[in-house]
View 1 (cartoon, one colour):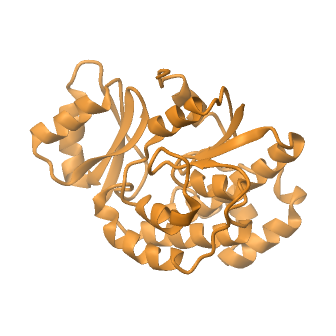
View 2 (spheres, one colour; view 1 turned 45 degrees about the horizontal axis):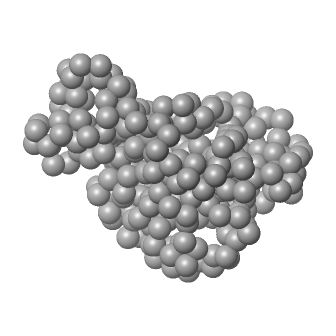
View 3 (cartoon, one colour; view 1 turned 135 degrees about the vertical axis):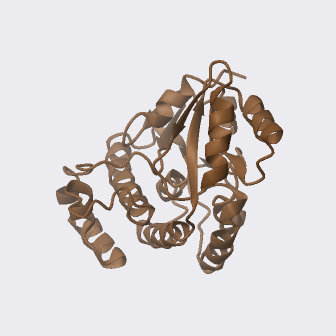
Amino acid sequence: MHCLLFPGQGVQRRGMGADLFGLFPEATAMADEILGWSIEELCTRDPHRRLRDTRYAQPAVFFVNALLAQQVIAERPGHYRYFAGHSLGEYNALVAAGVLGLDAALRLVDRRAELMSQVTGGGMSAVQGLPVSFVRRALTETGLPRVFVANLNADTQSTIAGDRAELAVAAKAIGALPGARVVPLNVSGPFHTPLMAAAEQRFRAVLDGCDFAAGHTPVVSGVTGDVFDTGRAAELLARQLSTPVEWVRAVTTLRAAGVTGFDEVNGKTLSAFLTRIAER
């Protein structure tokens, strides 16, 4: 049994999707109309260096992921029995599964990116070489109330996020532990933490006005780590902004369901995590 995986923000790069836009002219024109700017120009040339900006990076990654998925799924119809995505990538999973249409999902992603980009003064850092329990203990011992575990990506890889000043202190304390390596991430906000609560509240109002179909293929949620409940879609996608990405739990659920093969669009970020998540 196979699952198709979709990465989130962080995989953006100039030139991505260059060979896709001409193959999907109608979808590309639709994206330009929704966004109010040229998705092809941003992804292929990035003349204003906006791909580093959350506001533009999220729609760009989502749309390229979506076009790649159309290609992959068309080449192997019926091959994928599950879909899953990391943070932003979950929207791609929901489109692939028939829960959301491409245009509706792009509108949501565009609004999501706008609201998330308005939360500033924070940051994120990747923590490698430590179990998350050690990371949480270090945060507790250093007494930093505005730094949180944001992503649980693998058994010894997580992400912390929060207030920029406190994050620097936390990174120094965690980096001093044996085997630990802390790497700052090029993002502008404390994503997947309680500091995103205001953005979550505003986004929830947007989601409440959306229609979600039952879908034809199960998606595993990065919020709960379990199969995505389409009856709670608005709640889950709103919570996604302020709660950790439970990627280890999601992969564990997929494996328990019988998934033995994983493919990934737009890089190998999530595939690399798989090798560091032990069978349970």
